[in-house]
Image 1 (cartoon, helix red, strand yellow):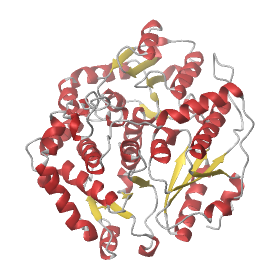
Image 2 (spheres, rainbow, N blue to C red):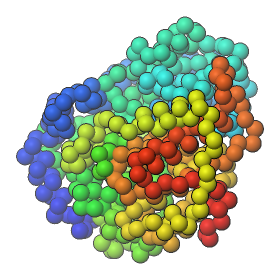
Image 3 (cartoon, rainbow, N blue to C red):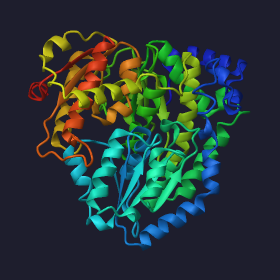
Image 4 (tube, one colour):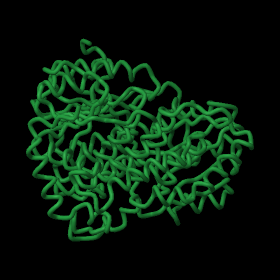
Length: 509
């Protein structure tokens, strides 16, 4: 049940203000002044408004491409990408059932050597199609993956597909090396808003998803969220008003408790919200993958989006926590939900007074990682855990930043530690796997509210792999990314420490 409880009156007032400002119409008219006076990083970031209909119109070409891939004996697709290039494909891989006759979809968004090696072993190498996905065309992780798999396949261009913006280095390289196909996306779509563009739909089509129906539901959502629908009746505007109002009221920990079979969608929402709102010392902190707990472990800094059919929704409402129902029940509903959340995030930015389309702090960690690679720095010292935990205060959030193999049993162990620390400290928690989180919540960590407390752990890879054409290995790159992120967090005055993995795992669970 949707119950806004303590923020209901404020949400109603926010909706009235959005109506007075004609905010929904102005989004659709690409009016940058809704967010800032300068059109830079706004006017060229609203192409996502058109993608449901535009991609639906070109659906036949996608379907024909997927059919040809199947006929050529491809059994597995490995999507290499980071952040907005990988998160909706991961929703597809984790949510939609395998379809007979279509390849299995795998997503690689790690520089951990074990993860890279495993991606090349999902099938005999000649039966794998590698989809290299990067908006900029220069993403370090993705280009490193490409170098490795290019060598592993014997430089067979017909086993590669590129998804990128027009004119990027990746687009040029893909043509020079004879890739099977280059999909050039509209450049006026930011990465985290690209789910319903080529970045999300090419992998979906290859996996046999009913992309036509997915887009039809997105079009229905687009119409329901249209420019002439009043904010109070507009699903996207209403949700944006709730998110922004809750954050302004101090309830900035957006906790997502989605149905288990649709839970991967929360990871996509996490990036959309964190990277769009976490800047200029404000923002919404998405809490994803944190199991439902006793009402007393939740503070008054929370708001929830919960499975409408779950008992948790009623329990939270009874505890006077704001709860918004998540009503999607089928994987194909996520086309509609993606559009709804994109519009909601855009309008939450208006409510918070920030531009949701830029990411001013993302590049800092990339530069620091590059510097760490160039200088071959000494390892960062590991510090005791307890003094850092003693700094945690009500209203904070605790983020575990783990540079580990994403398929390792360590992830489940760290999840148990996370829950134990939530129950002990009674603060919101997150578990980010590096370097993946750098392209998701990294912007929030550095540019958002100063309420984060960061515990970094780094597992030493068992068997490292050289990055072809470079002087470093994947393990070296992973360590440099960890060191660079920790350095930037500390330079920004965040409470961040590296601790020994064994010490963190010793937390009583």
